[in-house]
Amino acid sequence: MCGIVGAISPNNVVPLLVEGLKRLEYRGYDSAGVAVLADDHIHRVRRVGRVVEMENAAIAEKLTGNIGIGHTRWATHGGVTEPNAHPHVSEDELAIVHNGIIENHEAQRQRLKALGYKFTSQTDTEVIAHLVHHYFKQHADLFKATQQAVRELTGAYAIAVISLKQPDTLICARVGCPLLIGLGEGENFIASDVSAVLSATRRVIFLEEGDVAEIKRDSIQIVDAIGAAVTRKVHVSDVSLASLELGPYNHFMQKEIHEQPKALSDTIEQVLDAGFRPELFGEDAEDVFAKVNAVQILACGTSFYAGSVARYWVEAISGLPCSVEVASEYRYRDAVANPNALIVTISQSGETLDTMEALKYAKSLGHDLTLSICNVQESAIPRASRLVFYTRAGAEIGVASTKAFTTQLIALFTLAVTLAKRTGRLKVEKEVEYIEALRHLPGSVQHALNLEPQIKSWAERFSNKEHALFLGRGVHYPIALEGALKLKEISYIHAEAYPAGELKHGPLALVDEKMPVVVIAPNDALLEKVKSNMQEVRARGGELFVFADLDSHFSESDGVHVIRTPRHVGVLSPVLHAIPVQMLAYHAALQKGTDVDKPRNLAKSVTVE
Ligand code: HGA
Image (cartoon, rainbow, N blue to C red; front, side, top):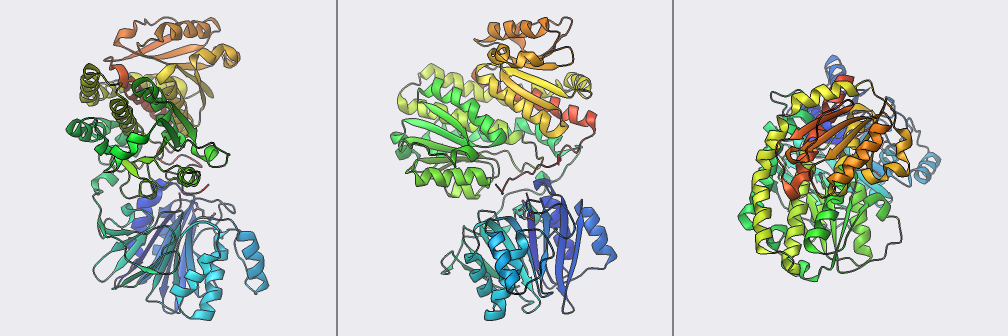
């Protein structure tokens, strides 16, 4: 969602701010802006639309300055308009950018209006600008003023503040939204994620919940939520610049789909090296797993579907009861805690607010056995968990998750087998079979990618459709859900997924000759059942698009189209079948001419509620 970048330097920071915002575009946004201090003025440029439009305006206005902040906004409070775009300014003296939602903004707005502040936007953010300004008048110290102001905010925020009255200082603070400091030589930076500062530095400090920092060209001071000075560890980021570039691809989603053999083998490598050992999940894992008698998975979106696949694996392989729940639901219900349940949170970014809040809620209920599955090192959710498994997908830029999903599946499969070892359910021959399955998976995925031309020709037939149904059974039902989600996210075709057996309990009423029905039908124990469900569709004139595997023995017929994945990969079949549904969505979106990497209304890392 919103992206923040800031810099203080002896050089003009505008190019760096603009480049940083371009790197943050993938997070999803609707407007962009920068503000710099120069000639005793705040110079601000904001535009609705793409960063490049704002950049052109900044060039036209010859914007320069040695200290500045930039922002990409994904509107939550107030429409997508220029006055609502960040940075927001208070009394022509102080500028601020904000990611998150201030829940008590209405009360603060009334109070600040009574103090004489004039509001020029509908955002919750503007109250922070005036509140910091209000305290700055009293303290004459921007660091202290910000600390006092944030104490009065409820909700989630990452903010950056600059002021004409203290032009050598950049202040930032965070609660619930990511923010890091990039360390340069005689210059320093801040950003929502490392991609925004990578061209300038790899040395970063991740701020922790409640931290407020004062950043000057040659010094950094950080205080924690209670105002005590703290030192935070400096990390050297291993994110490569190449992973942030498109290379020969047209879209990041396309690139990331094709990177899956590598992402999977990088993730699998750690399992093949270690075997199914608890240490894969952290030093503490042996102790934690010894206490576990159930698994509860909390996640959102695609990660929730990864968790839904895992439910089948965990119960079948380890014999432990496993439930999976949408994080935003769990966090607001009166859940009954089983303190011996392993709470597994899944988040690509490790910053997904709903998942983070669900984890906090689980802990408040007495859950202490926590594991996070995450793709971004040192992000908030792993830091708040006892155990972590980092997928090695590499940076994922496309809003529609692909390689993060399939590598999450590897992490979850590994968890199921590792728990099975503990529960004594894992037979030696099964362990060997699972290792072999993992070893062969990247090659099978590579073969599945070769199906692209066939899938593309299917996608052409979807481009004039308004609706589609996806069906699957058992462990492939969540893949049907994921396929429907991918299609709706990026092509805007309305798609729903059902367990194939549910069809006759309602959705069959939707089926006619205009309804394409995608079926995930590999050769597993439920194949014959799926075939019967397909007959039900055909009998109503529905057109079937079947993803099968070599052993499924389907033949094409009138209204029944079949694409076969080249191998049957047994227990890991859901991973393999995720690939064709990703490609179908991608090519359907291309046909429809949508913005594949930045679909409307969506954002990559969902850091607001
Ligand atoms: N609430 C602020 C910022 C929104 C945000 O962080 N989106 O990701 C606004 O609406 O401007």
